[in-house]
Structure formats: structure tokens, C-alpha cells
Length: 456
Length: 178
Image 1 (tube, each protein chain N blue to C red):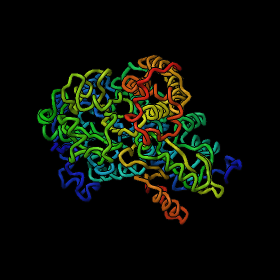
Image 2 (cartoon, each protein chain N blue to C red; image 1 turned 90 degrees about the vertical axis):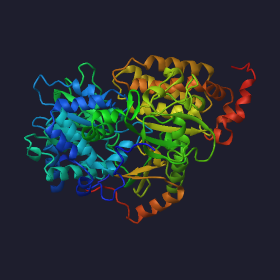
Image 3 (cartoon, chains in turn yellow, blue; image 1 turned 120 degrees about the vertical axis):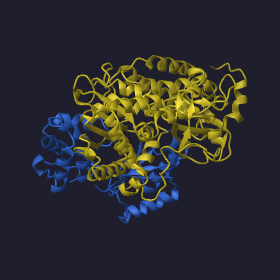
Image 4 (cartoon, chains in turn orange, green; image 1 turned 120 degrees about the horizontal axis):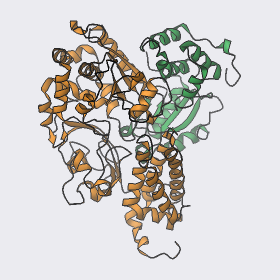
């Protein structure tokens, strides 16, 4: 049984509203934080070992300590609620169910950063959640948790929610800042980092919703207590949003110490595969991370048990490992066509590329077209090599990580499932129907690939 | 007003909308009122049959005190703004991986056939439009679609039938309340 740090009160009736939230211990971390020095709060967060929950896993306390407090410019905290990574829907679940936890986290974190103007940037599609947050913020203002002289402490903070309008790229922190300034979501060149030059040119910290929601617990219980949960540098609990061919899709809060096998197979979590078909592959951390074939999911290449931790999930690097990323855990059974799925992801990244850097703008489009060819039976053997070549040339050659995010799933699919790509080239008549693997899963047709072909 | 050209002086923002715009502007520091643009455009689009014509965009620029080009460049970047008239009820199906593995393609085909339109086409009565969009962040509740401000999840053909009937009967809420 995992600890419930974030989701402890989530099913309390009426927790969406201020009164019930307050009765369940809400806003106590603000009271405590107002009595602490900002640096003490940052130290607690450093001790907790909390790592950014948006996907990159950068230590939050360290990120906070980079914020420029010397220049005397106004500072801002911006919450990244632009959750758009395919497979990820944890933040929306939390904000919809318990919005005041985010508001409380924003206040406590703003105190630590000595920010007086903070924003929550939510994706435009979550419009009804935007309204929920707006209501929660208004309630917090009415009860004296926001505005001038909060609870008589002399500290002022304004917090507002603002929204995007349908652009995955705005999840990248500098693109988010651009968008928040009312512009196109084109990422900025770093350095300077937002901690020095961010929103309106002021020092800014951008944190994920889940990261911010962890802060009240850390302030109340201490960083050491948080660090006791989990293994090594993977401390605390993590929200995992699970989807795909599993029995119980949904959002789960897990200790960063359970095994992947337990998470997938036990009834407490995903409950195994929904039609009891064999597991074929898994994307464990949102669409950008490398896909893992079944044989590398529960065990690492070294034969060790794979755990739900940052380190274990990336064990073996990209050759045989993946990443925990944003916690978007997508499971595929044997009816899934990896080529089709990779095409789907490539289309997504092509659609979402902002167009600033040519390797990404052009490359994602080429990858989509080649994958379309392959999936629809018009591909050649050279196409597979061309695809490999293109993804390699996108990775690391763009301003923001969207290029990498587009390249990695393609690379991993070819690395682990090259035989399926070749099958698409050699047997175009067998893959004409988009449900080809539903009718004849790979296991049933793979013998065809054992014969030498003279035609390729 | 449909496709007919709207003249700038014909563009009227209601009192309620203007009040809301002023409120949104108040969330940002002096000299940074442009920050409200993206949220304001949502509100404006909601009041103008779900699309943004050039005169409407010009009016937004005027209200926010920015140049029209600053509005155009934002409208053309974000996928939620419509630059052409759309159906009254737009079914925006999420077609990314998780929804695709849970059968959204079948569902889109079914809906198009039922309504007698192709993808992105508006039905002759102007009521419906079927679109495929990228991940909406409801992967665990797939297949799903967005209609106005709301999500409709765990869809089946039966649920689609019911949803279409409800739309025709005017029983479907599109906007979340401020």
C-alpha cells in the first residue's frame, strides 16, 4: 500500500470547496511557512529530494535556489498546468478534484521564492478546470490567504489563473512564459534561464502542478520525512496516469519504491491487461520517452527487477531503458501495431512543432510521411534507415526538447521493433487493414520473417 | 452572419464581455495587459459563434491597446481558435495513441457516416462538425471527445447516438460558467 500524500483527502465530499478543504487541514502549510524564513523553506524542499514532476526530474529545491534574489527585480512563480504530453492526465485529475491544494501550494512556494505575483497557466482545453481554479482562488482571496497582508503577516501575494489555447509546446517552460505574455509559444534560447530572465524579464520559477502540490506536505512534515519514502534519489510519491490496454486505467499515487510488475499486474493498481491478452510494449513516462518491449519492462537488461523509480526506469540508458518522465504510463497489448503507433506519435509531434528550428519543423514532417508510407504498405527497406537517420539528426539540434521528444519514440521503436517495420515492407498486402494486428497478432505472423527475401 | 463580410463597426462586444475583459486585464501588471490576450480571445470567440473574423480580431486589438498583427499571430498559432465559421456542435475527437488504441478511429468513422459528412465538414444544417485533434489529456478515459468546454469520455456508438440526439434537442451545455 503506497502512502497518500497528495490524494489523502481527494474523495472527501465537498473537498472542492474552501470550507471542507480547510476543515481537513487545508492552508496550514501557509500558516507555518509565514513563520519560517524563505531560505528555511527552500532548505526543507532541498532535503526532501523532490524532483520536478513534469517530466525532466530536476531537483526542485535546487531549481528554487537558482532564482535571482540579488537583482531586486520582482520575482514570479508560474505553475505549469499545460498538461499535454500524450498519456498524462494526472494534473487535471488533481486540479478538478482538489483545486485548493494547488492554491495552497502556490502560496507556500511563493513565500519561499519571495514572489508577490504568481500565475497558474492551464491548457485551454481544460476550460472547465480553469473555472474551478478561478473559483478556488476567489475563495482564497475572500478568506485572506491571498492579496495584501496575508493573514496579518505583512506578506502580499496575487495569484491568478490564465490559459493557453491548444499548443503542446507551451508545456516547455520558456514557451509557456512567452504564451503567458500573450504571444506565440516559441521557446526561448537558454541561457539566460527563467530563474534569471523569465516572465516580463523578471526572475521566474516554473513548476509542474504535482511538484507544487507536494510542497504543503513537505513544509508540514519536513523534507526528511518526504525523503524517507522511495529509493535513493527517487523520493516521495508520484502520480502515475495509466492508460491503454489495462483493466483499471486512471490516476494512481505510488511510492517511488514499488516494482513495475506489481504496478501493472496487481489488482491494487492496474489489474493486468483488460482483455487478458499478452502485454506487448509499454511507454512508461508519456509519449516522448522510449517505448519498452515487454521483456524489458519488468526486468532490466541485467535481469534485475525494474522498479518505479527514476533510476531503475532509465537503467540501461536508451538502449534498453526508458524514463519515468511525466508518469504517463501507456500499456499496449499484442493487437497494437508499433509502426502505426509510432506514426501516430510522429503526427502528434509534427502537428505540435512550433516551427522555429528547421530540424524539428522539417524533420517531424518527414518522419510522419515516412511512417505513413510504411504503415500503409508503400514503404521500402531504405525508408527504415532514412527514418533512423532523420531522428538522429533532429535530436540535440533544436532550441527546446520537443525535437528530442519527437526523435526518441521513433528511435526506440526501430531499435526494439525493427522486425515489425520490415514486416510492413515485405508484406504490404497483410497490413492494408489498419487492424492487421488485431486479426493476426505479430506472434502469429513472425514466422514469415524467418524466410529470406530476395525482393528487398 | 455566416460567411458574409462583417464590417468592423458592426462588431459589438456585449457589456458582460467588456466587463470580463476588464477583469482579465486587471490580472496583469501595468504595461503588460497583452498577457490577457489568449484568455480574452477565448471569451470573445465564445460570444461570436465560435470563430474569430478579422474585424473581431481588430476589435480585440483595440480593446487591449495592441496592434492587430499581434492578435493575428496569436490566433494563427493556437489550434483552439477558429478562423472560419464552424458547426454549432463540433465533436473534437482525440486521435492520439491512447484513444487510438481504444477505438477512436472506428468511432470517428461511425459519427461521420451517421451525420453524412467527411472529417472537418459541417453538416448542411450547420449543426455538426467532426474533427480529429491531438491529445486532450484524458487518456485513461478513452475514447473521448471535446464539445465546447466539456469532455465526453468512455465513448461508445450508443453514447454517440445519445449525444447527437441531445444536441439536436438543445440539451447539451457547451460553455462552463464563469
